[in-house]
Image (cartoon, rainbow, N blue to C red; front, side):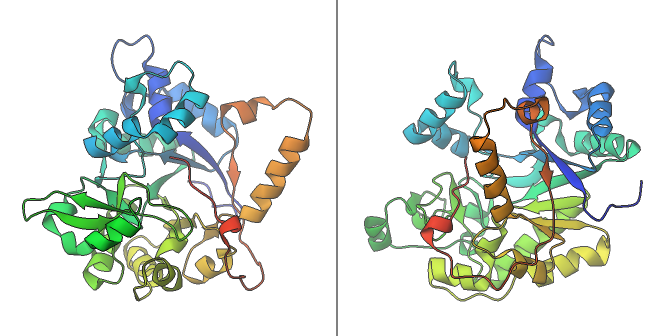
Length: 331
């Protein structure tokens, strides 16, 4: 592999959409093994250093059902895909049932083979880690309900979009949906309780599992498990998660790379937690403003998938976040 550049470039691929496109004319679903070498050569030839495969992990029926039934999301889907069909709605890739590759994509073995093919072309592989929550039908809901933020019937009455009844062999219980402090919960998820040391240990173990399958992790909404943010959201104290979890990974994989999705001027905070790179929301907003103000048509790179360029941030001490500064993640 070539030496790592100081400011690498990252190409994001929506894996399921990518494979659906490759499946046309095949008469069957495409897996990661079906990605042709010419496509990988094209990506390498564009000058990127990393490929981020979005949504490779196992998701479940519960999340898919929520995505198909949610009227707000369906309106968003229809704006994107006017000829939307029911089978087009596969569920959110952020409602994860487990950090193994979805069988429909070829499983862990197919990912390992694709990673080697990328490596042969000088490309490194990045995958998602979603620390804040799991899918509704994650095995832990039955096996370890204590890993989740529990609520009461009163909580459900006061904030019906933030809590739900969850059925289980041990009886029904009220659990919280994953969320950030400024928006209602994501109804296809359940919130992990970082105030529980066992939860933090279990998620550190999941992160270590991911590190054995790729070269870097893009950590979804990484600031939500910071102690100060978690306490503001849930009224519960927790110990820091990231420094210990990152150190554990680097004991085994010293060159593993961590990228934080982060907002609210907390970029520098995440860098101090051990991350290599962080989102730069201010830069993104300026670029987006410039794009919208331009009257020129988008170029081919914009149409096929814009690259995300990483940069470390040296922003001043973070200001207290406000609802206006929050970013709602699209499902």
